[in-house]
Image 1 (tube, protein in one colour):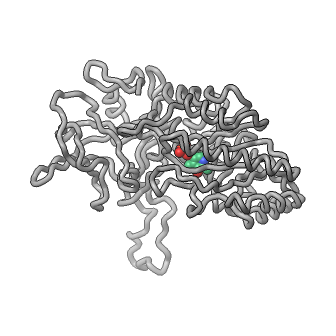
Image 2 (cartoon, protein in one colour):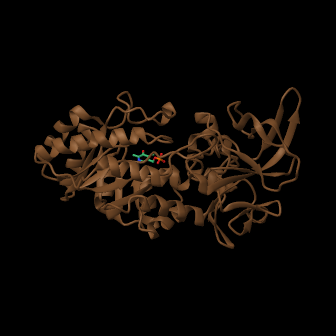
Image 3 (cartoon, protein in one colour):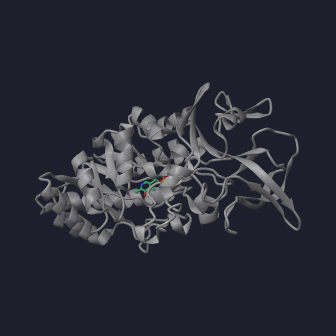
Length: 429
Ligand SMILES: *Cc1c(COP(=O)(O)O)cnc(C)c1O
C-alpha cells in the first residue's frame, strides 16, 4: 500500500494526513487513493497488452460513480449485475458498448433498460433468461448481443459463499447443456451470439483454477466453431485475489501471463471482469474508538459496525488494523467491535490490534472492495462518507447520510394517524 504511508508517525493517503480528513468529514469514512486505483487498473490492463482485450471493472466491488469514472477515463468498461449498476455506469460515463451484464436473475425492466442503453452483451445464465431477452428485444425491435455463461465445474479454493464455478453453485449453465443453449440462441430472430463467458469465483489466490477454466472454455470454443458458431468475445470473468493477511496471490502480471498462455492462439477479444484486485488495497475504513472495555476480555468499541463493513461478519474475513497516529503503545490481542446490537458485529476478533484508547483513530486496511458497496442501514445507522484522495487534495465522493435521508421514502398510513394529534407524522420533523 505505497500510497498509504506514515509520515512522522501520522498515516497519510498520498500527500494528505488522515486526521485532517477525519476532522473535516467526521468518522467513520471510507478513504480511497486515486493513484492506487489508477495504478492497479493500469497494471492489470497491461498484463493483457499482448492481445485484443477489454477490462470491464466489476461495479459491485466498489460502486461509487467517481471510482467508476476514474476507470472509464482509463479506457475501462464495466461488468454490471443490476439495473442500479447500469445506471451508475452510464452516469459515470462508461461507454455503453463497453458494458457487460452478468447475473442469474435479471428482470424484464432491467433487461429493457440495458437493451435501450445498447450494452455490449448480456451474459446469460439459463434457457429461460434467453427466452426473456429474446422477447424484450423483439418488443423493442432491437437485437440483443449475448454470451452464455458456462459453469465449468471448477473448484476455485475460496470461501464457499464466493465460489461460483462449481456444479452445485447457482451460476451459469453446465458446459454439457451450453451447446444446446447456443443452438437455441442461434435460431432466435432478435438474438446475436457474440460471446462465451465464465466467472468461477472471487478471492482466488492461485492461477491453476483460472488456467483450468480457460482450458475448458478453449475446448468449448472449438466445439462451437465446429457447429458454425463464431465467438467474438471470450469473457473469463474476474476473481483474482489480494493479500489481506498471509495469502500469496499471483500478481496481475503473473495472472495475465498464465491466462495468455492457456489461451494459445485463440482469435477472440478477451474480456476481463476484475473487481477486488483493482480496488481492494486502494481503500481504508477510518474509524474512531468510542470506548474500551477490559474485563475477562478486551474490547475496543469503534464507531464503525458490521453495517459499514460486513466482510468480517459475513465471511470471517481478515482486515488488518493500524493506528492512524503511531503512539508507540504497541499491539495486544483484543476484539475490535462496532456499536451494532449483534454479537456477530466485529471488525477483528481474537487477533493482535493496536493498543487503543477512547478517541483514537484506527484504519482498517484493504477496505476498497466489497466494503462500502455491501454497507447497509441496519440499526438505523446512516451510511458513512466516501472520500477520494488525489495527490494533495481530498474530495468527498459520497456525503455521509443524514437522518432525513435515512427516513426518506417511509410513510405512516392514514389508518395509523391520530385524528386530533398528528405529531407522529413523519414529515413534521
Ligand atoms: C463479482 C464478479 C466479478 C468480480 O469478482 P472479483 O473477485 O472482485 O474480481 C466478476 N464477474 C462476475 C460475473 C462477478 O459476479
